[in-house]
Image (tube, rainbow, N blue to C red; front, side, top):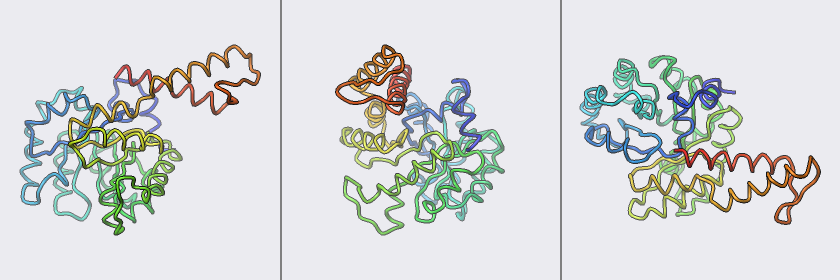
Length: 297
């Protein structure tokens, strides 16, 4: 079990690790656009990812990092708990500079792209200090093969699936249903659960013009066991958030189950024509807990 994740999941709700552990929506914003940082934080997203990697052209890497450094003092402490910074990958010309700058700022959460070995994560964790949690992105065949080791690495809070890069790496050509990615998604969810991490994050939806597409993708992710999703446009935040919240019908079912169990004094019960046993009771409690968390957020 990963102690970083366990501590975060059980910590007081004001703790920054807990905010990131329970977040369902993560909105990317380019580090080159510090004017958008406040807007992203006010978008309703549970967490914001300031991106030094894919959203920044190679020629702009240095200026993007400097823009983040200059904007950092204007970000309040409460909002900093809701921030991740996506650094550049191992083997690039920019990761060392990213780590130096973020260490000086005291950043408490980073997303690590192209994660493929636990040793890579250990290097990042050592550079940023024990207060900084890591969210590795599984984006390649090598990353998926090492997913158990990645989940167990120090300071890892959650895993995330970079399914677009993963498809490129494997030469895949998925349609909108992405059935070919079911094994990879299952492996990431499974590794997260075994390691005791917060539930994994599913990848982005490229269609930013139709929010229902992001919502449908988020519902699929929830059914698969993911606990959140990466977003690339503010319009995706609300539909994704509600896709991860239990519906009214699900919550009504959960209340019926728990009420029936309370009145049965431990005996066998049926609800809506189906037998109710311990796993069903546990599911009903989780549905109501998730509903309460969504209403409070």
